[in-house]
Image (cartoon, rainbow, N blue to C red):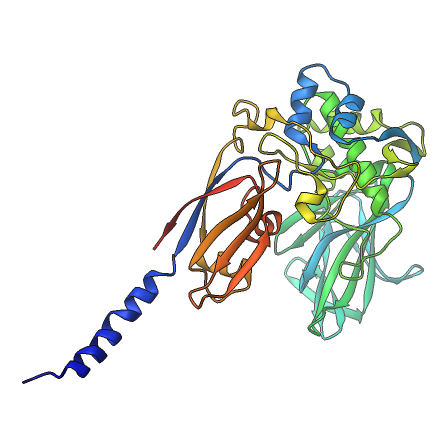
Length: 407
């Protein structure tokens, strides 16, 4: 059988070009870098190193935040801290002996009260939240409402809050549950812990190990107080909160922090040491106002400026040397790191159907990636800031090199 040249050409296009096209799209990308976090403000690894070298909390803060003052500010504000975001279900109960937990639909109208070892279960039902009591294996619906307030009582009572991420314990304040509508028209439960900034909130900050030197712990307590002060007074509708209890703002882990075996009391002592009075605490200020005191786990050897990271200038957030972060003995996990990121994650970061090539277009003076470009198999180009790329792909930092691609 004789095969024409045109048929041969068609077979070539069908058999070889699709395979070549597929090979243009890597299955994953490998990165190598240093540091963890956005790199702006106080380096926590750097603060620890300075504390080990004998520096004071105030000298640590003045080093990492440019042109600031450290002064006493009122800090008895009540904060609404988001402890559960976009939830469909949540469970609250207490196991403290001789304690009770109560549910309210307004400040003065209790709809249910349960003893220790019982719990309330909440689930989203249309635009409302269904409240159920749970005792052993028995449960029943009590009522439905758009909002609930949960309070607990009893000596040293704590409440356990369980959602899809696990169980956390909270000791102070009260918890609000609110039905919130998202932009796509769906309803979810937002859970917030309302409590006093001065002590109740700060005792639950879980940003650094409690075993660190006292000066580093106190520097963190002052930075955390300052950050919270900068967020107080404004409720974000998306979370029904002043600030998130996660890395979106700063880590708040509730009673787990101060109840840590051996070391929990050290964190509490550090917070207490930064209090000026029963109603004031040390804070980082500029022109008399608390700054948005960003902090980061570690850097690539020099802190990042706010203008490089986010494109918005902050006079106090300038770059300073941070050599401790690049010391593997002081920063064993992130002085050097390697990550492999899948094609799917990279494509989603650039909002492209696929990414055929990546190119680091520019670097900042701090060594971070300034801009990174992706090109799809169809030739579409998208450029992102290095910090945006880091955040979307969840790689440790913007101090990175593109090492290789895997096909």
